[in-house]
Image (cartoon, rainbow, N blue to C red; front, side, top):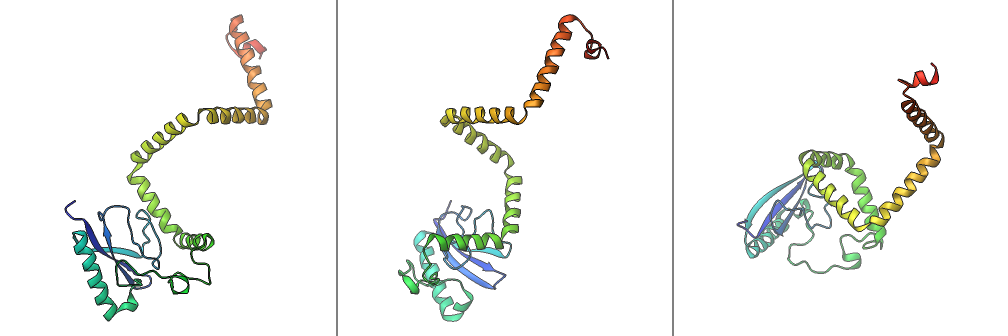
Length: 208
């Protein structure tokens, strides 16, 4: 990687608004944005109405300064079209009702974040499913290998638990399929007896 950081711009076509930011890292890593106003989403489930553009790449110091310069420019000209809350880095602390996420005293609580996450997933369920399906199709072998590694690691760490689960599952199956098991046992018994007596078929043995 020949750069330390980059400046990016997200465009939300649904609301016709932008979010400008800076990130120290590679543009292809899992990072999306650090906004507390713009909806949250992962790199593998980007909403269809969101598009990102890389504005510049360079050193960490250069990109920090560029972000500040661009935000200062936007704040003077069209700040209402941006999700950005502040134009300084690092941002000044904002507490209580001054915080942009403050909602009737619920901000910062587990209940608030659960409600926010549930709402976002409900609104973007189809887009998430489509992105997940695309990811699974493009990374089928990688997913299988990760599953094998996880299962092998789980078996190594939980042999007693696995054996107990197997015993419970077998016991439950026997209880729910008692008649079926008895019938299979009966058929196996007659088959072996027929073979031992030299009877060519079970029908011959039963006299059919």
